[in-house]
Image (tube, rainbow, N blue to C red; front, top):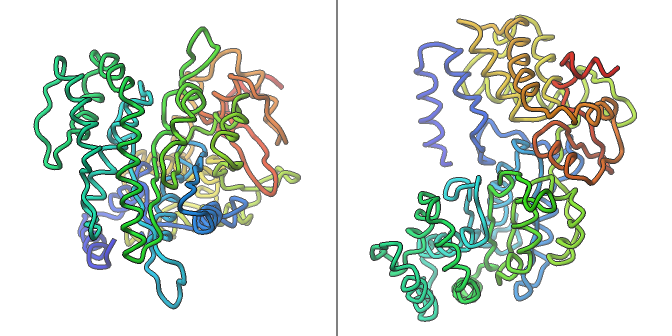
Length: 455
């Protein structure tokens, strides 16, 4: 974001009538921050490692003619999109004396904005990738490159003919209508199966058409002084977890394991976000063998060490969460000393997050909703946590409680069955990292009498 734009937003924030309104809006838990946003806080030192730096080095070292495929996983709301935004910014940093590396062109697409994650399969994803590759390469105006090759146009005409009886597709500005088709797949659930079957029959040709564009663009980019292309496919970690075939498989395995060969066939460096539960599937090894390399999830911010379960107010993780609150207060032009009735109120909210950044923003907004004006009181903070606790109480299946109780103390490992995959996906259990992973129950679950009664 340019300085003038940021200054305009901050000026608009400061014109709001009161501090609590400004701060509430600054704490939007659904907003993924850019690395130059004044609210962004780098958390590498309390996560265990910098995955962004690792991915940047791996992509720069890799042969552009031998594309790499990477998986980017982590709990929902842990900050994956923020980190991918940072990764994109680093990869696209122009060559300079301070940066000896040639920049990449990064194509970033958010599947959650364009596809139905309650019901998604590979044909939907292929169509969206085709649409976004074409659109974003066109916007980049690469010298000597056209976004509609003869081959790609032929693929579209074949697909359009196969769909014509069911879907009326208007002429698109770039001569192919993949963007329109993606909209149809999202908005017409009753026709989705038919559309998918038609796309599936042409999937090999479609992949070849996309690769034709990607490889040609990569060549032109290198001729223009850039390193090539990187494709980031975000949002897939939100794909709904649902058992299939009587529990023998699930939606995550169907897309990422059963279709791994096709996901790996794009001829460009590609990063897919995936649900953290997938890393604990018995078939994860197969997935990594297909894609190459071993992947580490983005962990929670650790508030304590594995060997010392007590959370100290001055631990590095707690300080990092306080830094996040400070950044939101600066953005909203609010004195942080006026936000809470006591410092212990803020510490309580931070501890109840378990190191989950989005939960911190959710708790802050919920607590502010319980008061007319600042400061946030301890009673309001406890109400915010209680509201979330009640939703967990309604959500946790009966047969999960005994399993969850095991994670009342830090555990070095977790069973690789479907129940524990769901617990990770649904944020019942958190993963942390400090050289090695460990697992603990969501601290809000600890507050529930149902959990405490297990003794």
